[in-house]
Image (cartoon, rainbow, N blue to C red; front, side):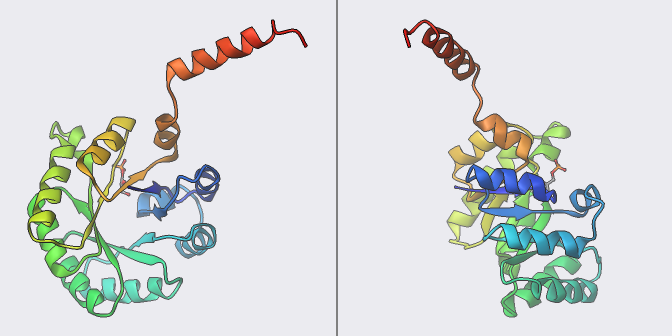
Length: 214
Ligand code: G3P
């Protein structure tokens, strides 16, 4: 299972890298806006930090605009993956980009049929947003199971990126399903390493160590 980091903050990426948790990065327009930096600046710097897929999203809504942005983004670095929204114009763009060898990640996926269409269009990755489904009282992880079944039924090579991850249970469930990738915020990456019994056990060991004659 690969872990991508869901952030546009380079200091978070460096911290995740230092513990070997970053196989790739996903950004989106909202995450980039939080940095106060230009989009290109951020993406270029991330490419110097992480040697893996770096996901950068288009903001055009028409196919021609998406293609123009995607081609320009793909020139930044060979590891760039272009995030395209799950719309009809988006699927037209994915179809063209796949013939040009530009990898795409179809984003804002909330149904299994959207994921099926994305795979047929030639997407390299598909991003079901589990947290946002949970937010509206739908079980987001059921979507991941459905996509996984469909992709196995037809041996699609499109990889599933479990996105909108909000807590460690999302990562656990994604791993149990066998999702290819989870894209995880730094806060949740840290939570994956924590357990109260580890914390209290270590505190007791250090306390007892003080009694050992030195
Ligand atoms: O990058 C897309 C996705 O992970 C967004 O997450 O928490 O804004 O739903 P969230």
